[in-house]
Image 1: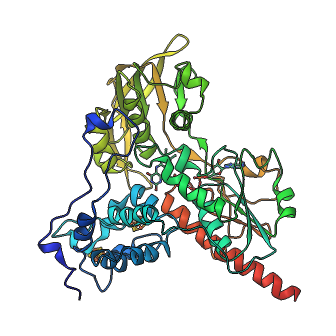
Image 2: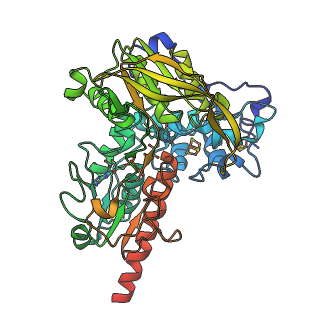
Image 3: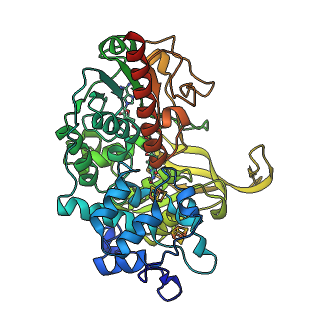
Length: 475
Ligand code: FAD
Ligand code: SF4
Ligand code: SF4
């Protein structure tokens, strides 16, 4: 064993420096700084190189974590990057936004007695270093193949699949209804978690690698699924889930009540310098407003933290369960609290009040009752517990469901589940339409970036197998 490892007994866990809350409120830049080289090496050296590395088992991509930690500890950063990128198309992105406490780090076996190895921060460090040093190059396939693949959706699932297919020489076309590639990486997740140039350099590299992006192209409006099926040898549906879950309470139709994604997309576009009329006219801008966000997941956390940065007068988050039962990452809740967000635990909206626009929320307190079918205690309102909160911008962050894809794509033949997700054969990721595959949130329901990447890679492998079988039959 290298003498550069097993240092967890003598070196304490350290995260990269976190900017002070007052400083971070002044901009939308990331909260954590980069490790300096010595710190990265030192933190990587805490790994005990387990025989059965639970970190690797609990990484959805099966990253070879102990191997790249060892290479980092030994100062072999280019090798560490090559190792990291061999299983992950976007290591610097996962290093920033994976919920590591539930995945790799949460399962690091030294954690019981010592704090976990800071795997995500080291992964981010080695990949950012690779970009800085010019080690990340466009793809140059060894052969150019005639077959073309159409990928619907430029989010992490579509991008990961595109990269894997292009490496083998396929002609790859990506279609997306937005004006920028990246999916929720650019228009959902705010810059303070993931700065946009980090995504832009990945999508830019794919473009330089010969992948064709068709932006502002809505499948169903520009062309139907079967039009595209005729143009390509295979298709991958990776269009994510975008229909916001609603809430049925009086007053929900008042003005200045918005869906979370409308609010976050506007904020992200403003960050790019775009002209966003609904922001300029003040509707989607939290400045000087009393903001109430309803929901307790990561999307709600992104909304409350965006609102404090826009200069809201107050920001309250209503969540129907308690802190311990919140789906949002504990790290993001802490960040939000530091930034001045007030959490109103065990509460829910009873009605939105106001004439034309919302002016207050009447909420009630909840308590946790009997276990429901999912094994969680179901929240129930406490009778007579009403209270009122001033509110002139309400944001609903209650989760997402798939759109009606067969109708949207003009493809009634496409089979979907009763939840609207696309039905696939899980071994091949092919839908019921021959040669049409699906991956990411549109198959799983709202999930994580790292799972979308995993699905994109798996779908690419299945597409290759399918095309090679077709070739073999034709030969
Ligand atoms: P998406 O990223 O949604 O990409 C789908 C793409 O398809 C989009 O670009 C869309 O424009 C395009 N599209 C849709 N319909 C059409 C059509 N008809 N025609 C053409 N194009 C179309 N995950 C994490 O791991 N960490 C986080 O911190 C995190 N934070 C999040 C914050 C927010 C606010 C949200 C909403 C999600 C967050 N997630 C996070 C979840 C993560 O972003 C998703 O799981 C992931 O992006 C799914 O990838 P995907 O490629 O399946 O879909
Ligand atoms: Fe951990 Fe995510 Fe990186 Fe896997 S991809 S090692 S889960 S941060
Ligand atoms: Fe290293 Fe922790 Fe993984 Fe073990 S579980 S190999 S100590 S990072």
